[in-house]
Amino acid sequence: MPRLAYANGRFLPHAQAAVHVEDRGYQFGDGVYEVVSVLNKRPIDMDGHLDRLDRSLRELRIDWPVTRSVLNVLMRQILRRNGIRNGIVYIQVTRGVAPRDHKFPKNAAPSLVMTTSKVNHLGASRFRDGAKVVTIPDIRWTRCDIKSTSLLPNCLGKQTAAEAGAYEAWQVTDDGFITEGTSSNAWIVTDKGELVTRAPTSEILNGITRISILKIAEEEGIDFVERPFCKSEALLAREAFTTSATSFVTPVVQIDNTKIGDGSPGRLSKALMKHYENYIDTLSEL
Image: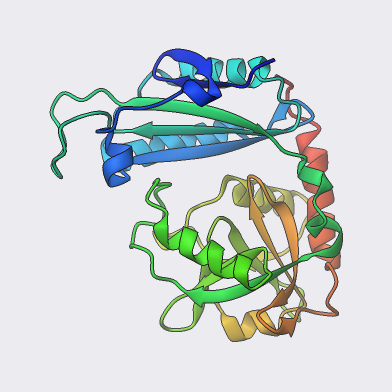
């Protein structure tokens, strides 16, 4: 079965799907996106991702390309057509095609593109062995709460991590506080057992997986606090982990050159991952 993509009203062979050269997403990064993971044919937190897509569109004053209910149907269609049992669906909406001009065009129709990929989420060794992260300066703009396609600083950070043999890069402000990873949220467990993650301000993207983990923690009676934490506090943490739609709950066992805890995945990180898997099992299949 050939792999299909969706581009502005048509399902096409993946290699033939394209947008116009003057699409503002291509020329300005003037667009937003979402990634929804699928595990055992269960889309994870789809409503949450669509809620965040709606917020990002409103913040950038981009209209929905189709209604939310239609987009939900299209997402499920492309997943089914591509036979995705375990993988992701990528959704991108831009302001559309218009002659190149920094100002918003008056009559451009928003562009909608979707692709899928097969991913063996739980087969990654990082869930068993934990992952290394490095720290980098946070050089992004001040509206990180918008899931914009303008990701050049994130790409530079992810490349720095890859070249250091790390899974992720945690970004650090000028005053020494960790904001988040290049594609994930950052968490620590203090030496007193307190679960800490940064509050959802404009300095971070409020991860949908992050929200689910906080709900799980609350249901399980796990104490947590949303506050800034600095790099030095993270290095002294009992354990650490990172969350996202594709990394789920990934234990962090090393930050830069410092082992976290005993250098193996922490008890709470593993417990939260197990609770998260149980939560996914309650979701509806495609």
